[in-house]
Image (cartoon, rainbow, N blue to C red; front, side, top):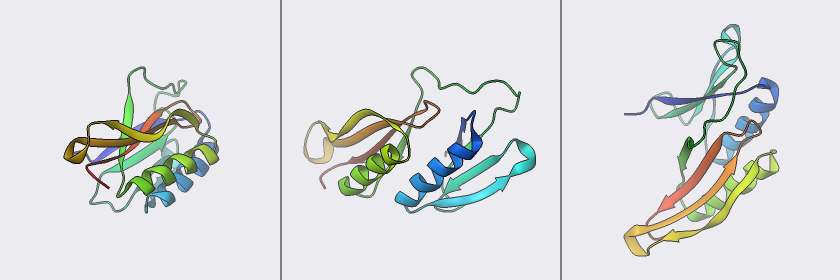
Length: 131
């Protein structure tokens, strides 16, 4: 149902370095860049799958992270959750909650890690169920 989510940035060059590295850690890549439209860039595993876009705001104003807004990135394994989190920190992101098990066990297990990109946008990399 979700085609793509868009996040604003005030420093497009910095954001592209961050998201190039983060997408790579998840098996994705830069799929489309439209430099004439404020740098709108799509990342993902394919155009037929949900994607993430980063761009300078269309109205020319300052980009800001939403309070209570978060993008959750589904991982293939708990090890990939760890890798995504560590890659985000390595790329200049900030910690919002180290990788770990939250909630129940078995099918209800939620293994997640929380971080922010350099513009302050919040993410959760997660895996549900048993490893």
